[in-house]
Length: 554
Image 1 (cartoon, one colour):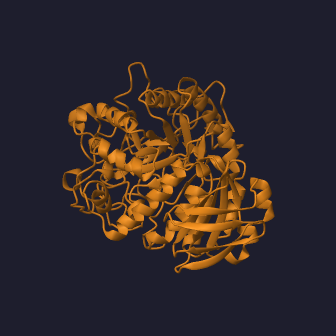
Image 2 (cartoon, one colour):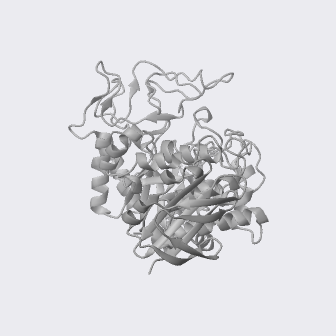
Image 3 (cartoon, helix red, strand yellow):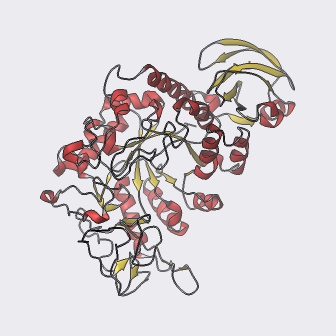
């Protein structure tokens, strides 16, 4: 089985070599990355890092304050666009790609298709966003195929809810943006107001709402007397339209969809849509952004291949890195998804979360190396890396709408110096950045290529090693005659530890007692180890690091 390792990059930002970086800057001032910037040499670098797929974030055309009306693209009102570049999750045309990303705007779809082909040529898969819960307030598809009806085209706006409508309406009420826009005249008018994307069903969204988006209607009446009544027969019109959108992008050669806020869309729709897509594209993968653990099995049963493990493993590893939880609590997190663990996507960063090296996380990229080792090597499940994480990107820029929040902006035209030096300038990294990338690369390549990690069973050693509980974590992986011992150290100093292997591990993994030569896979150093039930192995673990001993048992 191949281990999936996803490299997430914000397409608009990744290849931008313009380092003006003016807060609230326009595309003319700050520039913008293009599909063409992600060429084969760059993709080969990403593959050498250990990635098996690239998630190109922000491909579909979304709300923006940049004027492309010369190309027949409708302009957006600035008060309902977040930032100059706009949110990639406020889609304005599901059948188009972002013109910002094209060298030749008139051939933007061809440039996206060429990037898909390049990505496949170097042996990487392609992941793209599917944003099913909401669209931009001024959504209007000008690129939909002939014969395809637009969202809302046949809606009855006099009805708050109808199974035949694509949107929800606040009948008789105009949109009131007074909680969002202050001191300026509002030029955008919406009558009647549509419900806002984060399930706000009145006409007065607030600044912290997803005010730039409107909620799509999948056949649930959220405001009826009984509350959340379901109307799924006949099949709601939105189901049909959104499934056709999935099939449209699947036909371009996309390998997986990362489905934004999947749990805000009923599982019945996902069962319908995933089955239909997989009927034509049986290898297609669906990755769901689901945060409620009580819904994991529901959405997996509805056709998702993988789900985010954010509120479990991500939150746990973050707290362990920051010293807020003992390392032993990692055991509790994988146990909570035992049985579905291979379908949980682990990560330490993504576009929604704060950068590890930011002042809002722990301020030190090296401190998360042991968490990276655990997330990559603990199980067979996928792992995701966010572009710049491998260099220790801090995410502390004041970009404009995003501000200094520890995150890399998804709303502004911007560039990251670390990415430019890391991918487009030979010898551009500092020694510390290059060392960090080297560690990330070694671990991810082990996760992707070593059979003991791609196929091996896992045995958690923490229950018999209470002396490690606070700042160290240890586990075994085994397949066939290959055994790996992984011990990580979250502390600021080197640790000499005695790691006990219980007799139950020998029985469960079918290990025979033996003396063997072990190779530490990060340093290539060899050590003579005696594998004996209830025996302890002496290991020296570097600060903010780990040891990965691989043993051949026959």
